[in-house]
Length: 441
Image (cartoon, rainbow, N blue to C red):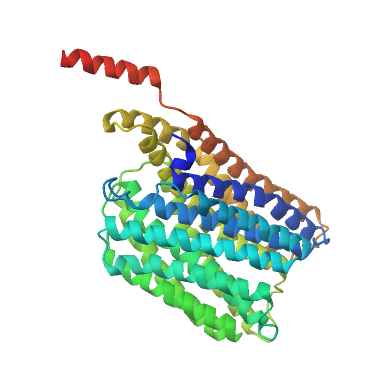
């Protein structure tokens, strides 16, 4: 089956390819910052937009389509594939990156409209499919709806910036653009995906659902208050939001932890990545509170510069977001490949087991490298409080962290490529068919 006949797989694989490509300017910017020779601002713009738009957003939207069962062919009105949407999203992103590189913000705005149109097309498709196939009540669906609303709202703020409509309040619109997309869409969407996916991976019913529900209500409230604190430049509001987020995160993670305690250990890449991501969420919320408390004083106890901000944001992004993305892909992509390539349910099982086994290989190394590399960035930032940037310790921490992160990324990329290239064993399928014919005779 051609890849474009499986829209969710196309979006997910292309999104991960963007993440790999975006790591190159990210590494260059990090090395330049540590060496005291920061790169031009457009390099950071390329890195951030390639990661968020081409990578994470594309994977999440493809994952939404992947998790919604396809309606029966008799009732299906929408197409199985979305080639126009796919090319609008990725072509628009390329246009945005070229515009940032050449400082042609008219090109950025035009390409941004194409990306927003692609987002709306996917959201419309998700809504139509969900309304026909899901049995969720409004208490389950509102979380996804809120995250998608934040995606569109944050993207519109980006368009307003690119068109230059808000010169006087540019900083506020920029804050709204960043935090609506990152906190409102990426964080909320991943929290809900992990919330529904982990019990499925563990094959256990969710324990303490009431606690989890309270937690998932508190988290978006905390995100809204936090964005308000950023817009008002109020550290006290930000700290209050952090307390709400921490309480919601503890309740949400506690429910997952109780479910994990009653489940049979699977030692799978999917469950381990998703579970680690939940704890990175709590850890980064705690760090955010400490950063806010440090900035509350007239004379901060510890200096907080650009390198510390980069380390903190990447601990949140890589530790929480990347672990969740890699975990969800490890579980869902083998399923969609098996379902797309083998129609017979009985014959599909052995093939799915093969793909899952391939994804679980070297999972301990993969998860440990990603987690240790992420923590290494925090250690790198902490070292600058005691040693100069030119110190050998800074260089060792920098390259060790980058090598660990790239090891995990390359290992996952190789496994993802391998399972996509792994075709069903046609000889074995033929033997099964022959045996079935003999039994029938």
